[in-house]
Length: 168
Image 1 (cartoon, rainbow, N blue to C red):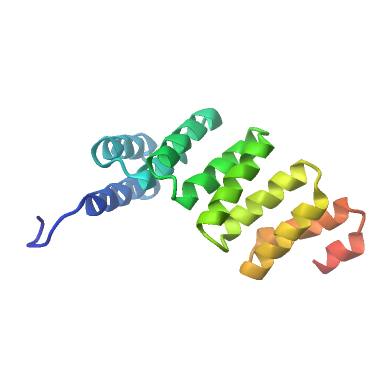
Image 2 (cartoon, rainbow, N blue to C red):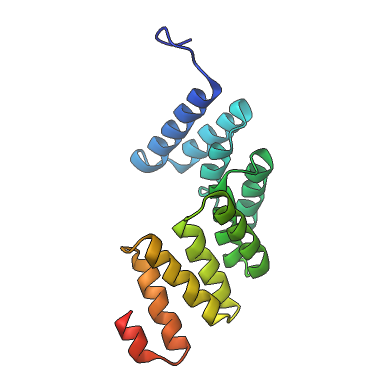
């Protein structure tokens, strides 16, 4: 109980996230942010804590391990799937990335970041038609997406359509 109100694990996890973000971004203390998140995970076992902890990790393989633990803790948390998909793109594990982006989209319909990632994975697999469809979907979902517009133009160039790229 806090201030006469019931205190839940979700409240505790939210405090951990806020403290870690303050340490990382305001105080510029990455080590302290990591310690706060690691302690918070040990105490609350909250997938959001692990997902945020993953972005503090400079090693992509370790980042993927952390995100896998977050997904095991809460398979229905779309953001963990999406982040792991982006890590898999950097590791050139495109099929795994596509599977994670699919899971994120299935869990959170209309998730522009997951569609953007799915487009990038398709682009890197040289599936330019599939990538173009994803980038166009991103733009429909978020018309102000600079990345969506930029990548749609790049795909049109790769497909041999520089005039279409200029219109993108």
